[in-house]
Image 1 (cartoon, rainbow, N blue to C red):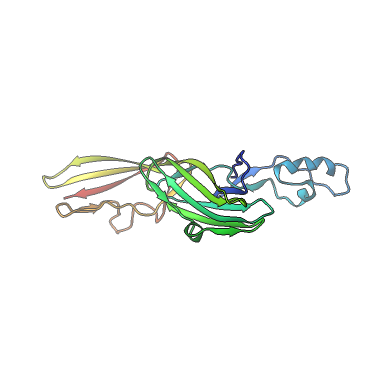
Image 2: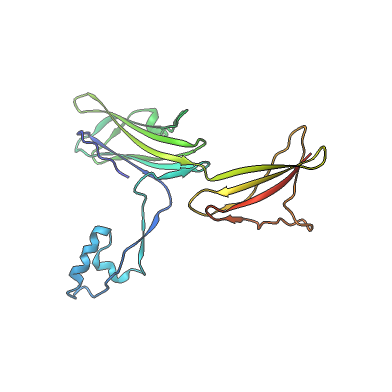
Length: 248
């Protein structure tokens, strides 16, 4: 995703979140020889990123589309973003530094771009500096990626370019619990886990930790010791599954 600043800066700042591309349908595709008259009409697909010249080589109908916005991310995922600073002038740009911060409702985390944030660099005409920043999100709610570029003009004046990219961090699952009294020193806990995302995911491991005063016995296995679930239990969107534990 590229944001264009109305002010005349000497550098351009481009930021794109790194995530899986999506499949986009092209609609009906007309295949033909390059010399056919209908070939001229298939060139209207150029606006979709596919030219009529290569139409005859396409498979049945979808292409990969890079992310056009930051979208949403789920708690526990690793946020990854590509940051690029490009010198758009015919002259070198001096004292270039790049800084990236991830701001949530309660904290502000510095995601510095390695050596580019430590000392100013000289950016030659047409030159670029880029890097990939990563951070495991640990808080639900609104997050803002703040990217700042500082540099000096040929006249020696300090300039600053700052961009903001907002995205939401959502919870991937919902956990509900129920308690059942049994013996005097025993309580049964039922944990219901629901997939609240828009895609299926696998539950690889679910555990309930004990403590010094309480021991936990999982009751999610068959008499032969096998789990009642598959090795990787697939949970579809809005579906849920239950786990049972005995607490003593």
